[in-house]
Image (tube, rainbow, N blue to C red):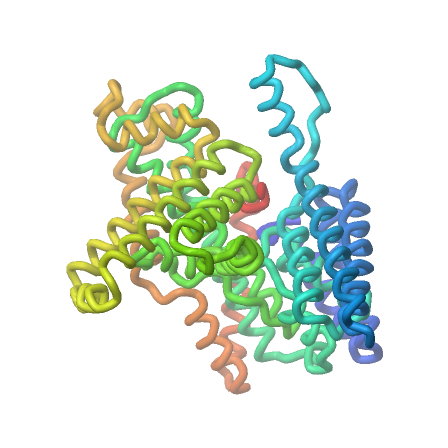
Length: 498
């Protein structure tokens, strides 16, 4: 079920909100169960055949996690420690095996057939929506149970933690400690008009990003990338427009989803972590990854990079760990060599960035940091690197990505013709206007984190401003849902594919 549809905004959400707070007046446990079941219905609406898989994953990880916690807190800790570690290894391997089968089985067999000239066929394995997110969330739960222990053993709360519908399909990747205390807090179950009004406003802001901005510029990206994958070559103007259009489409699509998830959660008095912090303002690639998809970046750092050794075993090992982490991060996004190469590029970028900092030293970098010219050059180089990598992220083949990059360099023979845009009925000038507008918002305008914090502060004062915000948010949300409904087709969020 998409947040942008009337089925969600006009039917599912009002019913779930009304049921949650009505039941909470009599039973907090009943309200949590209601939200858990509602989240399962939300998931099953799209792919009902995989609801049993999701429930099985929840039950299995809950058993393993509580088993680890029980062994870690046992009185006789010495023999319990190895047993807890074995359970952790078993749980992580089981989760990764499930993810590998559904997400990578076809990719592995197809490449094996290509390499060996065989014709093995396992059929087309369907990808359960959101499997990467709910699997990583539960791996983090098992790791936290082993490293920190857990104090919450209620199955309903755990099931809600995993399936909670605002984050279930496309994140953020959550930690047990971030969510479970909220589900056990009595204040979560009391309707709060300030939180509701602010949540409605941020939900509407996310709808605007997705429906108006991301979907608005999407045709310009599609008009270039799809023909390029099919064998046609864009000229320099088309290639740059396509790359820039996708750069902004992806940002406003995923950022819009994250805003909607945060806004929906505020309506239920639940706080989700921010997942974006103006990443296109970053002045280095490491700064970019501290701002882009923050929950995934933190997960890769905490459970992969540090687990591989981090920077504890010398420079060479550190750079190898960075490259490995980003390669696997690329593969996490999808079963495609283009995703792997995207991860490789970011691993290379990070390695160069850290090597540059090591050569310059902190004193010289501090001097550079005081120069506006250096900051502008650093920002430009970072954005260029990110845009080039996005070309591989979007293209469905290396040949398609190559045609885009050659076009960006003016090396394609069709230079100056703009046939691809003409075939799609689009104008280059209109597309660049879109890019300038979206770029201004991404580079200059206050980000939704700051806007949300201010709106929440206003709404919690209980003033008339809160009522105005609620009314404006409701009107805007209805407008964008109706706008989306009138279109020939409704586009899913890009990260639903991952």
